[in-house]
Amino acid sequence: MLMSKSLARLNVHVTSISKRQTKILVSISPTFNRKYTTKSKIIVQKPIVEIGGDEMSKIVFDKIKQKLIIPYVNLERDYYDCSLANRNATGNEVVAEATAAILKYNVGIKCSTITPDEEKSKEYKLKQIWPSPNTMIRNALNGTQFRESIICSNVNKFVPKWTKPIIICRHTFGDQYAGKDIVIDKPGRVSLVYTTRTGEHHNYDVKDFDGKGVAMLTYNTLDSIQSFAEACFQMALERELPLIFSSKYTHLKQYDAMFYSVFQDLYLSKYKRLMDKANLTYEHRLIDDMAACAIKSSGGFVWALKSYDGDILSDVVGQGFGSMAMMMHSLKSHDGKTILTEPAHGSVTKHYKRHLKGKQTSTNPISSIFAWSRGLHHRAKLDCNYNLLEFAELLEQCSIAVVEEGNLTRDLAYSVYGADGYKESDTITTNEFIDVIARKLELNITKIFPREVAQTAN
Image 1 (tube, rainbow, N blue to C red):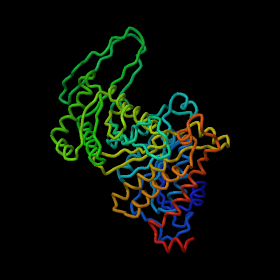
Image 2: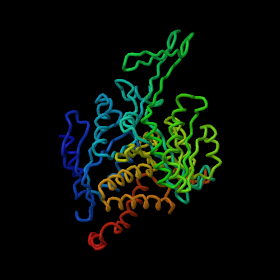
Image 3: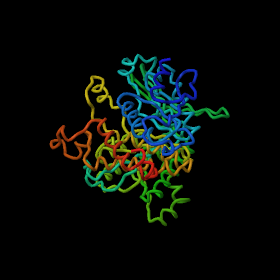
Image 4: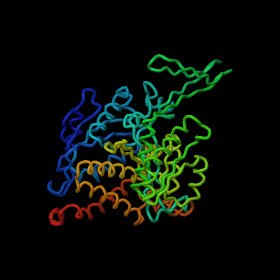
């Protein structure tokens, strides 16, 4: 009954509720918070999967949805509550359900979630320390993660020479995040045993321990590495930028060497001619050398990285361009059909604690807005929905324009005015920032809807 009352206030129609209540399929009422007639709303024929998250990111995500999406777009959202509390309540089953739905509908839009540690485990009274939902979804999609900074002309970069985009292509399958790590609590030997399907056993001694320690096994597959390399070359051609792959194959002479060989063989056999024709280059550079080189560069390249390297260096690149909250983040399956979009940052715990005390926050919502816009953009491309495509692009344009007009959250004010130059009066709150974008979107919506409809509505 309580759930029904809450949904009634949102003017939604419940299509279905799973037995474990881990998801709700809702259809947005055309009358919700909207001045325009239903004819002016963009109709989306197929659902998107919405994945709920945690803390301040969840609050921002919901405000974006209510003020910037629902008033203009009529779509079904197959919703999964992947907050830490619900993952714990469902034994993490909700993540498996969400993953299956993304593969079914091909578009997932995800809010940032908590990956718990010991402290969070105690705070949320967890049954166990649950794995990151991102790792589970990424392994199921077996795709490539793309990250790129959203550049605004007035936001100063912490790496001033970066005048051109740097697009991170991160391989998300296997490696450390899907590996097996163990604690060694007494002296002994760690060995690796590989058993073939025909019953052959191959034993490899790894380390003799005289005392306590730790050990970890990571893995990857040739198929996944090949698909990753294909995605990186395609991105370079699409964006007309040179491609650089970085690894440490000189030290990891088997593991990283497979990545190196796959990229090199694919380049010579398939992409060299295409890259030459587009006047583009491909090269491999050792990860430490390229990290230093990137800082000295002016940008302007696609950077292919293994999972751990990409996780770390994409944050460096995001902050280098001004703010982690000004970054696009998507995971695309290797056939290009399925996409998961999400903010490039975490759940913003510090701001959430402030919010719980009733204090105003100045949380930058841009990365979350682009999670919505990029997800809708992909839905539009799959469905050949021109109006939805135009709306997604307009939402991004309005968001960038608002920043360039001087409307700044605290992180942006820090980048624009410097640590010693900005004042609290230079910043606006989270709600104010979203409201400014909502007003600009309202003013520019006639680029999609007929002008006479907008005039009548006003």
